[in-house]
Structure formats: structure tokens, C-alpha cells
Length: 344
Image (cartoon, rainbow, N blue to C red; front, side, top):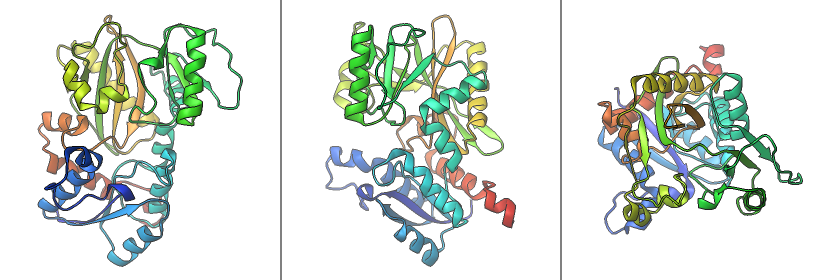
């Protein structure tokens, strides 16, 4: 593609150095995504600047006004420490009529709020586990229509924050205890849903009007003891020693029946449309041994680290990492935001 002037916007604490040299692996892991994106765009010949954002948009507005980037490459996952506020940063970019990568504000809002997302999926006839929401201000009442075991998580946090083996509960006392944990320690409302035993599959989708579905990816739980629930806990997703101990990995899903693959494709596209997503996203599913499919959630703007699931699944389809980033920039440049419809 034509060489672009790209302003990469990241969290203020995740501005990467020019080189990995001299930095320990644990430190690199913190800003690996930001480094991969910036260094790859530079090697591809694009003019790149990085801007760290914390709790003010003053510098962002000044950078756009002074430098006039062709596209903002958005890597923010929060604003001022609040996960759901990243949508406001994107809305700010739209008010400035500035093209950006990733999802639009409405899609971010609908996908970030897991309880609202599940209501919309149910309306659009997307199978999803039965669920209930427990507000922080409400008294606990055991849900009569939900069947144990139940899975308890935050209504808004992602990256498995607050998810552990204790998140799967078998009775009302443990349910109450875990809901209180989410309320007090995570600081959000709690989403409780029926736990689905089965394979955990991830489906990446790219596009605005025309959609591209990437190969189905799977979380493989290796040799984890049968006494532990096969769920993507914080340890499973981010603790490398824990992963190596049990042989936990992600890879292209194998041996999926054609009917299941076709159904995953249709459901992924339906979810993408129902939530008004744009740019790129990843849908998470559980598939039972009987072939029943349940949508767990939709993740707008998933992790773009070169070695993460979304990038690996793109690579499996023949899209190498530099091309993936350029495709995402092109989607951002061509997204029909409201200001384009009004002002041309």
C-alpha cells in the first residue's frame, strides 16, 4: 500500500523503546504488542510516531493538528484506568474527522459491556449460555433458572482479569463468594453464566462492509488435571511457566466437522454485524462434544502482538504480519464514519 503517516496511540506506560536490546523478557512482555506494531510499520516504510496517552487528550489533539497523520493506529485498551472509556477516545477521533484503526465507538460500547452484548446476541438468535447480572448495589439472590456449575466474571474487564479456577462454582455459597470477589476486588458488576464444557475456539474477523473470516483457532489446555476447569484463567493466558508446565498453547483448530466450521463462520459474521463492529475483532466460542456451539463474547480490537492468536491465525491464512497491519490501516482509512457521510 501507499506509505502512510501513522500516529500509533498507546497507553502512556507502554511506549516501547527503539530496541529490545538490554531489556529483560518480563519487561518486554509489558509492551511487546506496541513494539511489534511500531517496529513493523517502520520496517514497512511508513512514517511512524508513537504517542502515550493516560488521562488527557490534549497531546493527541495537538499531534493530529500539527503532524496531520493519515491514520491513527489505535492500541489503547483503556483511558484514565477505565476499560470502557477507550470508546470515548475513538469518538474523539471521529469528532476530529481523523481516520483510525480498529473498531468504531458504538461497536466498542456494545462488545465491552458483556451483559448488553449477550442480550443483543440472544435477540439475534445467537446461542449463548444462560446468564444473569449481579449489580454491586443489589442483594444476592441465588438464580433459580441457572444450572450449576456456573461461571462468574466481570461484566466489562477483559484479558481474563479476575478469572481463576474459583470462577467456576458448584453451589450457592461459592457463587455468592465469587460474586463478592468480583464486586470488591475487580470493582465491577458480575456476570454469571452457565458453564459450558467443551473446546474453546477463537474466530478472528476483519472488515467493514465485506468481512474476512480467519482460520479457527483453539485454546489447548494440555495436561491440566481433570480436577481443574478448562478455562482461560489469568494464569492460563499470561503465565509462561504455567503454560509450559501443562503444555497449554493455542493453535489452529483441528478435526472440526464441516458443519461446525460452517456454523462458526455464520455465527461470527452475524455477531460482527449485530454489534456493529468494524476494523477487526475476535469471537470466542465453546463447542460441546455433541457439536453444539455457544458464543461466549466478542472482543473488539484484540491483541495484535505478532505471536498472539489473531496474528497467528492471519498468518495461517497467508497474511503475514506486515500485511496484516497494512490491511488494518486500509480498513481504518476506508471506514465510512458518520462524518464521511455528512462531509464527503
